[in-house]
Length: 66
Image (tube, rainbow, N blue to C red; front, top):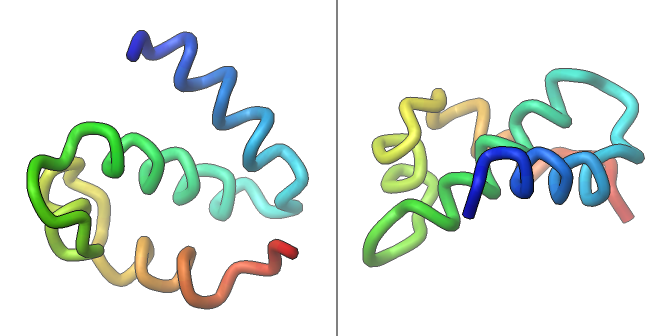
């Protein structure tokens, strides 16, 4: 997936999140789901993307989405 397509998708999916850090973590998480081979655990996604594992965990478990 091209970066521009991914950026556009993230804008649609995470645009309703109020905080910029949540939108950023959402983009990291989505990119990780697409590029991580094998099991899609938070640890594996963080390792594949270089994103902080704790930040991704908090995004998934504590975000304010519906």
